[in-house]
Amino acid sequence: MKQFTIPFTYRSPLISAIKNKRKEQDKMKKDFSPTLLDLGPVQVYLARHFGFCYGVENAIEIAFRTIDENPGKRIYLLSEMIHNPKVNADLLERGVQFLQDTKGKELVPFDEITGEDIVIIPAFGTTLAMEKKLNDKGIVTQKYNTTCPFVEKVWNRSEQIAKNNYTVVVHGKPTHEETMATFSHASANAPSVVVNDMEEAARLGKYITGEKPLIEFYTEFAGRYSDNFNAEKDLQKIGVVNQTTMLASDTQAIADFLKQLMISHYKLNESNTEERFADTKDTLCYATNDNQSAVYGLLEQPADLAIVVGGYNSSNTSHLVELCEQKLPTFFINDATKILSEQSILHFDMHHGIEIKTDHFLPKKEPVKILITSGASCPDAVVENVIEKIAGIYGISLEHFSPTL
Image (cartoon, rainbow, N blue to C red):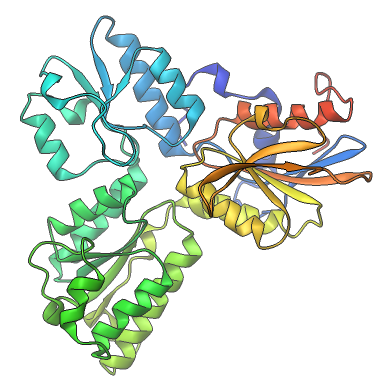
């Protein structure tokens, strides 16, 4: 796989050594067991896969190269390039400005943008309407486009199934930048609708089977379907694609549910299923799959608590938190400064959207066993800082520590 040039401050010598060794030992990526860092009174179990994925490193390389190659030019990011506070802060420090926040609110008036400016498209991609808006100003969006190739793969697959007259069902968070971009590209080629979860997929299914009157579809899924969507005919032949940062198992479950519903409703069999349902398994992101599979492997290890590191608005990170929360106390932090002491930690309660403080988060026992992973947009250096902070609580230095692999 391609090696990217990214700021060295995002790298971690310790974690790089661990990842490289694990890669040598497991070239086919079949071993999802964690890596043990035995620090004596505290044992840290690192997930087999975590941190920067291909799309994130690609975006970071393009963004920082663009800055270096264009001194004196005004450089804008359409919105956060990735959902990580460290990376976005570094870009702001280098003079990059964000045109919008993650909800689409203007931070810089578009009237101020000219064709002489550079606008970087973030890793999530953007809508066709936004591309046109920028192109009409003379900005060549493709020149500084950091859209993840795996996001573009979803768009391409949507276009392929659209040519065979399938309606595209997008599994994603409706207000997430990537979902809006994917919906925009899908709806340019086919009728499209967004479902957030299995519950919404089940409600959509009731319109397919006729259990609910079709007229109610337009109210229930308001703002989620493409222009001129005809619920009577456009739900007769469907395919499911996904926001790449969703739980892969959830996307697959939704696809399996809708597939079986179509088979049952239209009295199909396995040989003619594609008359009504498109096979889109190839749109699941490899990194999302690997990181989530690694968490399942991580959770097989008995432990006292889990720490998940990443941006609080990171979709893929939040799903790792969800998985860990099912089994043990889990603390979602964005950097090592949130660990205040052995007594307390500031962490994000994503269910209520607030940061909270928990006291006595480390049990009074030895060894304390901690599971650690991070999201796909989190630098390894941030994870190493978290491990270092935990080790310091127990009076341990990582300076000469060498993991046994």
